[in-house]
Length: 117
View (tube, rainbow, N blue to C red):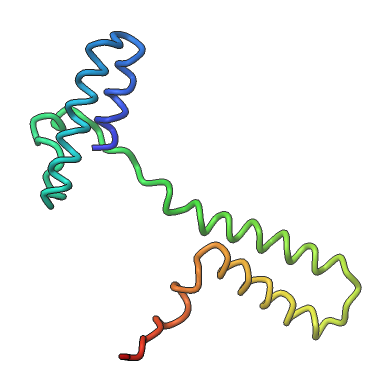
């Protein structure tokens, strides 16, 4: 579906009037079907037959960013002249902090249970 919408957006450069109408109709159709709860059929299968799916690269962005930031933190910790025993705790703390900032506490901590009133 994403690839089909990208194709429709590319048509805006060639024939803007027709492409805007097509894009508007398709977007409204997707919105209506989503509101009806038809999430598995947001677009017709006939519209998607000649479209190649877009590869999902976004799943590697957050782990790659976490690794890069953590390596920068380790390099920063190594430049300071602190005892080796403290370096280990600083690196673990930096890793924990980077992970919590990028992924949020919901990935690591159990969900909070609310007490009934």
